Structure formats: structure tokens, C-alpha cells
Length: 212
Image (spheres, rainbow, N blue to C red):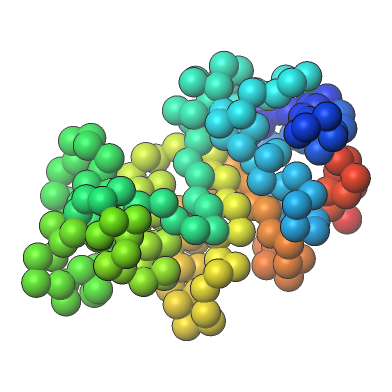
């Protein structure tokens, strides 16, 4: 079992957002979760990413239970990619050692190679404050490259393509395919159609999960 979430409860300002959630995923399985904006999808994902600690219940990801250990097993790609005010290289490697060959492969998998080759400073180009010098699609592919480089067994996708236009979205989708191949994936989206490739799809409503 790659992901095991049992009886998860989470409350914001005395209002329960998650009410006894149970969710299980086998290794390599792709799970989809849909629901209205604000229903708690991102909260559930952050619990599985080790970013939040459950107020009740338990989360186990790839054998890890402590949030700091869970985070080592998870790579997360969110709707609005968070970039550091640094180079493309530094945003992908996050300061870890990586050979030029590995970096080249990661950039190719993330559909970044052609764009990087067009830049005067290549992969050492500065992305700006909060990624202000790159487009939304480019920022998203840099974030995907970072996730590929982490080589985590579990991938969490939080509305990863919802803010992109169709042309940019196709490149990001190709990058996401490289990222998720052979890994356990939980993807959340308010659009049911974007979850069509998942083996199971759930709806989060009223703090509870219902299989569709």
C-alpha cells in the first residue's frame, strides 16, 4: 500500500472541513478527487504531502507516518507554481548535486529543452522575483522538472493544469506524463474531465469522500 489515510479529520475555525476521510492507494495507482472549490481537496492533499498534521486520524505514505518523513516520499505540483528568485537550474535542483546529464534528461522530460536553448544564459537564466520573468506554462514546467528531479515515489497534483491555456497545457500535460509514469498519483481538480485517466475517482462533498 503506497498511501493509507484513515479517519482523517481537519477543522478550520471550528468548522470541520474533512470528516473521517479514508483513502487508500496501491503502488502505481492513479486516484482522482473532484469537488467544488473550497471543499477541502487541497487540505486533504497537504495532509498527504506532510505539509499539515491531521487533527485526528492517521496518514501513511510509502511507509512513512511522520510529516517530515512523508515529505521525503512526496513531490507536489500545484496550480500556481512557486519559484525561487534564482536560476532555472537552482529552481530544479534546489541546491542538490545533479550531473549535467541528469539535468538534461529532467529538462527534456519536462518539455523545457527547446525553450532553455533559446535563452541567452540557458539553464542559468534568472526567473525573476516569484518567477516574474517566465510565463505561467514555463513556471509550471520548471516546477514539474523539480518534481521529476526529486524522484519521489508519490506524486500529488493540485489543479496542476487548470490555469493554463490549451496550447501551453498540452506541453505541461506531456511533462506531467513523464513525471507520473510508474508512480502513485493523487490528482485533485474541480473539473471531472481532467481526471479521466484515473483508476478511481472520488468526489469530496460535505467533508466526506464518495466514489464515483
